[in-house]
Length: 62
Image 1 (cartoon, rainbow, N blue to C red):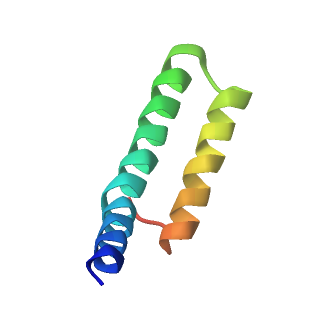
Image 2: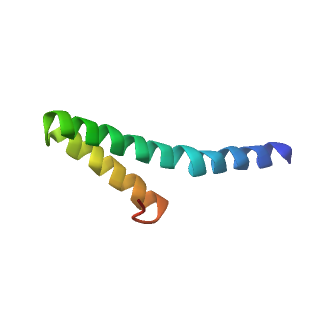
């Protein structure tokens, strides 16, 4: 029983902490590259990945 609770707690921590952190990090990296080199395929790809994470989280949050 404790194993199942522990597994759910770990999954909850990933969803609550790691996913928003990755979304924020993708945004910061994209902004930094865009500021230095301008719009590129890489920055558009990072923005697309960030948008996908927002969709999975269930909204367009800032």
